[in-house]
Length: 245
Image (tube, rainbow, N blue to C red; front, side):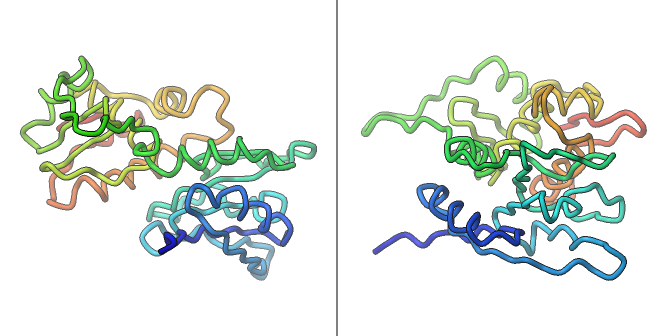
């Protein structure tokens, strides 16, 4: 029986782009559903969908719907993993941070898009499976050992060999950037990091988006970590965030 593909939502008026993306992302288990919602009265773009009610992957064609990815202080719910497509020959980005996890450029390059979608699809894409019949490695790295000291009492455990973080023995369903962000916080317990530091450390110095991305990802992590009512990531007002275990 053929495996059912996940639906990725593409906001674009370009039907040919949808067909090409569908072929590019087929090997990663995605099918493309294109939507071209009209702009609201007054020129306002459609709002960013919520992660808990939206698609597993959102792709935004910045030629038509760049406004969807502009920071909106009124948006409290986390957004779904988002890939923003920009025209390399005509990049004109308004002031303000972008609510996008990854950026790729048009004309489309298949390998670049696959790489960036893998980054959004979760660390398990990058995990190296154990050879058949072998026992999983139990030896923690230095980073995971430091994290255990701060997080063991709260049920969190970091396994860098498997690109995995578990809560009470159950693996958390984390996108790649969520995993890297939480790992960085966990391996420096009690230390406060600015948003600018976290953005450069996890997304890289050449990332086009702004620090709003950090707030969005922290909210996603809190939803996944704090179901039991215990806060593990603390906001340090006017500074950034720290991991408290």
